[in-house]
Length: 241
Image 1 (cartoon, rainbow, N blue to C red):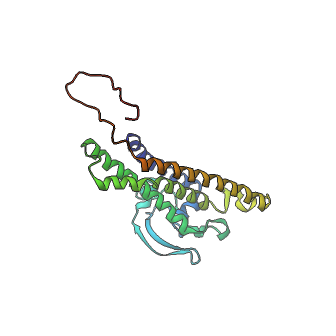
Image 2: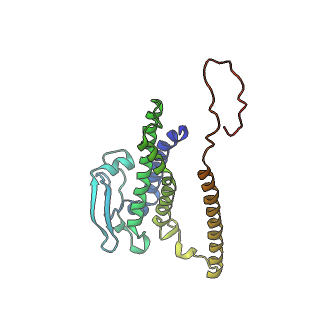
Image 3: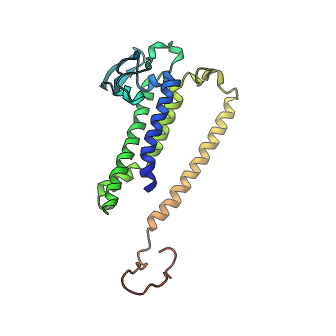
């Protein structure tokens, strides 16, 4: 937990730096991440969309909820933009990403998980300093709930990265269509099936041995260490204590 208290806010800061890189070097991806169809010119405020329903066919959001001027602060820490935020309509359809809803919500899932971890670390730190870390059932439940969130955040991040840069495999240089493998489909299917089988075996082994350890539980017959004013003596109990 000591490490996570440092890592959680640091991860948010690193994510912000990554968003700045996208802002300057991959503008189509930023427009997709924010479902921004129209260009926001320099010298104006940019609103940040909290939630929306992007419509690829009509090239607009059917509805959205915004925070006025928030995106300007998130990108440049200023009330007004120095650099315009280009909208998706600035590019031809074949030169920009699609599946805007998937990119948009994957990015927000990643943000929400990062903020959840930061809040969890803050509350846990306060409880820890007060000596009440394990007293709150809801806090322990929040830790259990957090267990898979890191994996979900990683997957959401890869969706933003890979789907958001389409139609480019190297942004602005090489199209994905030009980099498609020329291997026969059978060879690709064989290697994919082999990897899937290998990880399925790993998963099964993990469940088997993990369940045995959980079902067995700790040894309740071991004596607890004694603390008091007695003379110190080396602990000679079994190592599993």
